[in-house]
Length: 147
Image (cartoon, rainbow, N blue to C red; front, side):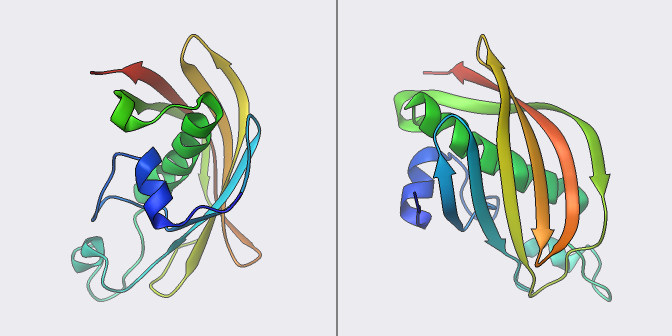
């Protein structure tokens, strides 16, 4: 299942400059998502991180993985932000950042559902640039009704 930016915006409440998923390449409900983020030199965070040696902040790589995981959770549960639902990032374990991400890189985001119980989801995540592992983490999100 491929999703373009318009459909992604139906499943994530984030918007520029904080929407960090550009396209979904694969999605298997209840199991797996593969998406990507095109990293542009025009990203606002590069103005300060670092102007003379721009790299994508590691916390934003983790956020991109959490957003991809949120799409997977929303699609699996057949819920949307417009219905009053939100996924809160609530934690991560086993985080490892393996190499920097630079302007011009395409960050591939992968997430697998490990478990879901009482609205708390655990995902096993990896990010790559090409064949190189950039980041791996276990991410937890909490689904909540807010409206």
